[in-house]
Image 1 (cartoon, rainbow, N blue to C red):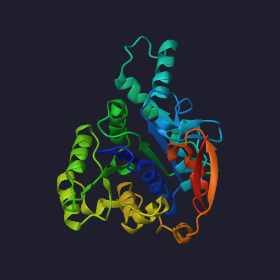
Image 2 (tube, rainbow, N blue to C red; image 1 turned 60 degrees about the horizontal axis):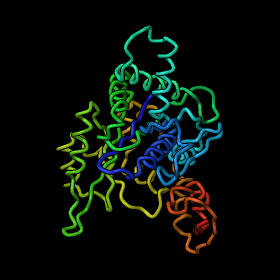
Image 3 (tube, rainbow, N blue to C red; image 1 turned 135 degrees about the horizontal axis):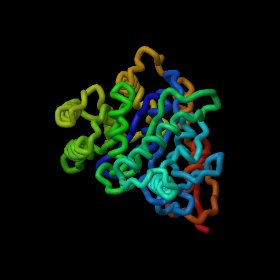
Amino acid sequence: MKYVLVTGGVVSGLGKGVTASSIGLLLKACGLRVTSIKIDPYLNTDAGTMSPFEHGEVFVLDDGGEVDLDLGNYERFLDIKLTRDNNITTGKIYQSVIDKERKGDYLGKTVQVVPHITDAIQEWIEHVAEIPVDGKEGPADVCVIELGGTIGDIESMPFIEALGQFSYRVGPGNFCLVHVSLVPVLNVVGEQKTKPTQHSVRGLRGLGLTPNILACRSTKALDENVKGKLSQFCHVPAENIVTLYDVPNIWHVPLLLRDQKAHEAILKGLNLLGVAKKPDLTEWTARTKVCDMLQDSVKIAMVGKYTGLSDSYLSVLKVNYNSCFLFSVLL
């Protein structure tokens, strides 16, 4: 099994979920079978009791699991059916460890974050990665893992430690880390600033994880000198630095990654260059072009309770993306 980990730095809301989904789609277009896992560091067991104002849409899976909205993106991009176990939370991990402790499975040992919590996280990832989600027999080739939150968050620390151990255990040829970070542009001078990303990567490396690829969010494509600076200070090859600049809609993101040869960097990191084929995104490109050509808007009134946040009804928005403009009405 090969693993791609997607982390985020500087600020939340950079689009780690869309990036993880796009990476999965790109690898699938290369002929690989892909599965996904979302890690949410909150203490809730699942998203079922959380207000959408707090965390966006509660996405309901086929097995009834109430999970993070990013799993909806995974299913839409990859055409797969995930299970509730594909969403790992701190609550689930701690509950499983405490249940084992109460049954005496640890044989009287002092139960600690390291190694018991970190081991439980790694075991959960390995187990879920083996579950087929595309309707075919046997496990997938690649598991894309998204770590929610931002590097430096206290609640993420057990997961960072576990994933650091995990990357060492599975080996460098089986683990690739993509770090999504922000490169802001100061309007006064119009200059792209690399310092936030430098600090984010330094913090990530200090926690035991080294990024193989940088996916930089910015309003425009990175200048070559900016890439060179990031490469020098973040210890990432310039060809492994891609820009996720602002686009009309998220369906362009896989095409951005392909055009910048992000798939080649990932496949090289996973020793899959000789196995994977050239990505075929013909159907996806056609769909994106159709979406771009739509000009006339259609207003659909939707009665809802959480209309103050568009992410509350994300799946409804995505269902209508290619034909209409969604107009919300307060209940």
